[in-house]
Image (tube, rainbow, N blue to C red; front, side, top):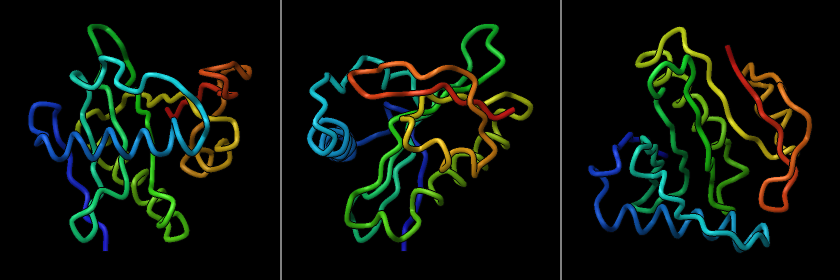
Length: 147
């Protein structure tokens, strides 16, 4: 059973932040063989969704509220641990994102920079491709949006 909870950066405990950074590093740096600096200075302005099971972080994403006159929100760093990927927690993570967005940011578009291989996954949640393929840290990405 997975339990989801949203946190501002300053609500995260040291242990939670450490778990987030470790999970993201395990997946985006080690597993995907992509050496890049994950702590990018943006976490402070993000809202963080943590999916916990048996005291361990197993699913995560971050969401950026609109800034100034933006009419959209942005999410990223979507991750589930390798050991639970067959359990559908990625889909549950996305449902939590859509529910939260609808409640707190109604009528705003939702954008993400998606790895190309996940295009169909995001399309299953109503996202549409709105860019050509581009390189981000050596991995093909596309911009996707849900209105």
